[in-house]
Length: 143
Image (cartoon, rainbow, N blue to C red; front, side, top):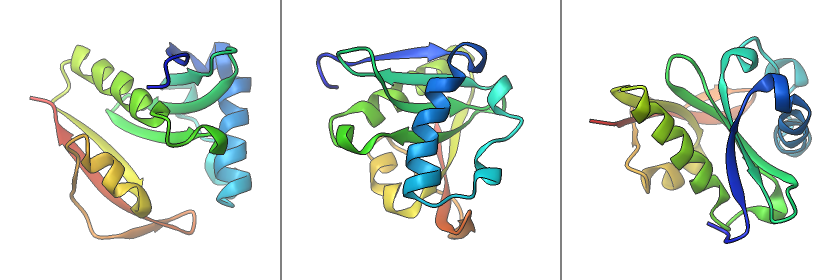
């Protein structure tokens, strides 16, 4: 983890502008995800993790759906490879453990599979397309 960064658990109500800005940059602009597919009714009911740089600027996000799915993990390009994605994931896994959930689930873009495997996630589906991007389902037992 970048020594000067922090990860906070936040709510959509309080931090929607920051969360939206990161996801717009990464998913809609960079990955060409249609805007209509990016925003859904789950943001309001999910737990969100927000990564901040040393200056307190929002640079990454991920969310945890009520059913235990982790998703919408995004780190702005200049900050990738510095441990922020790992820190976001750790915070949400800890949240799941506190909820006594048995497993964590996510749909990973196929290029990101090795990242999640480092945390013990296993691929548990065939490849499928979501918003024009190849994904696989992955899960991690939290016993």
